[in-house]
Image (cartoon, rainbow, N blue to C red):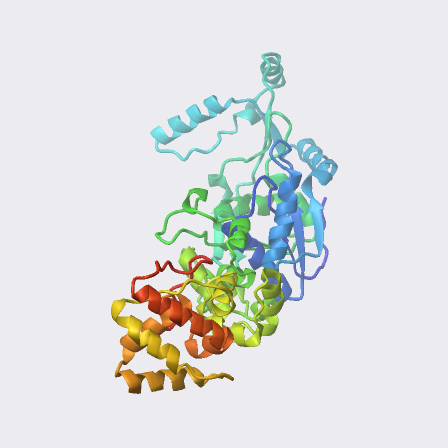
Length: 477
């Protein structure tokens, strides 16, 4: 039916277009792509859209968009629904050879059988009652209005494979229920179309979640029954939340669309998802090529990996802290906050999201409402204003100015630096003022020091910054 043909490494990511991609299935897509690219192979995007009632075109577009954002590329695209004739051909073949047989039990009758088997200490395996029906019994059941579902008769063999993650695996098919491949309404369950498409499309490796392990045994036997060579399998441990519980949409923003809208860097998301479950250090990468070069599926273990959004935020910040201005520039321009290389070097160490740069741009170049620390700081701020050096300014201006103030006032440490930072930035913490001061310029600094002194006297109310909250991360001196 489906003879095996030599082919390069070919993987498939096969989402059902019934919802948005979340971190769990995005991780599967990414690992498939990294595995294939590392081997110089191909990636197939296969939309398993046989559920016509739930599959939607807008989800197809969303999946494409989210994969592209993550950095996952594919070489070909297939819709499973377009292969319905091929699937029907295989169903007819299996029926004709007697490997698919009709069963007429209702869901309630099947559940009753399972309960009885458990009560008797036996495994709840289908008893193959459908195989024992006579033609007359089938006719009577259909005259009652029953329509059959169709099960695959499994051979009682020991099914073995070497899993790239789990190692040697085996299942005794005699201990498995004959799986339903065709529902009573004629629609197909996942197993048959998936196996047929994997064989016909030359899939060499199937990489997916460990919840499919038992399915693999059935699919291997079906694959061989159709005359094909089963793909190599790898089953990844499923992600949990930070506390070890199952991931759920109720836990927060877990879709790629939500992560993108939250301002997270795709390379940070990719670097985290590609290494969860491995022994590799989770660190920023320069680009997808670096992620491909460092990928090795042998590094994945069977321990349960935990997805913690806090880890992603920290990784995102680390990526931004090391980002070159040339890479940041087009996106800063899109945000209308491109203050040049000096601005980027000054603020990047305080960013968690790139959009945070807009707030620091306001501090450096905009109009803020400065803060006075306390009434006792009013005189100090006036002294600081009078001592402010003339321009031009450079990276040494801050040190020279604060050194002179220390000598003149006797202030040091927090007493020296805190009032100046509040006056000049409106914040307790932030980027190094040695870098910020030359950006804001003398006229802006004079104005802020004057208004901060008035605020310290209690003459002017002193809210924080008029452009929204800023990160409290960074150097306070």
